[in-house]
Image (cartoon, rainbow, N blue to C red):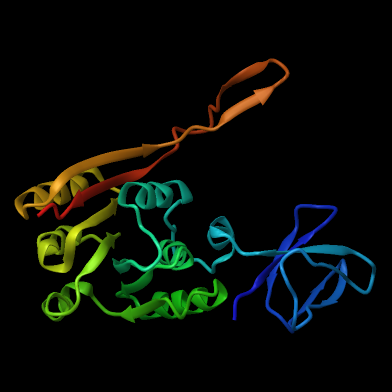
Length: 247
């Protein structure tokens, strides 16, 4: 059962609740109808209005219970844009963490098998998939993907492999056996040394179109004096490798 975003009409306060659930705040008590729908306006017993919205990707990033630093929406956008991830794709993911990337992919219609080595993180990710309404498309497995590589290469191939793990190079080395022809690998790494190791592994594995990008984004500051890039940090998040099975 997917939750809905309840946005207070007079402020930027927002909450997640499912059909039939109750919201209790200083703004009053609100019973969410079982037949609630996107676009409805609900009122608390104090007359405070909340607009009902269906969840979108950025809402997953903002409201999932976190177990660490999740992948940023801009990096997820690059993954989807560079690989053409789409509805019906079979995705193999590792390093689930909070599950934001898996949730995004599930919400665009991909079927995701994701591995998380930490049992508590994996359980939290499963709850987040329920919250995001994608538990039917995202299977969270507890364990190390590298332990299952032999079994996975004997099964149906994947359209996309997404990795956010320290041992990503080991998986990339087996990518040709895991991917459909034309399938992609996308690897997020926080450190330049890991980015180098992963790119060399992709080349050695015979993947094509290998490229590694540093992701930097700067917000603009707009005020009465003028417009300029924000001075609040450089906006670096990490490195993204993309490669493809070309034969």
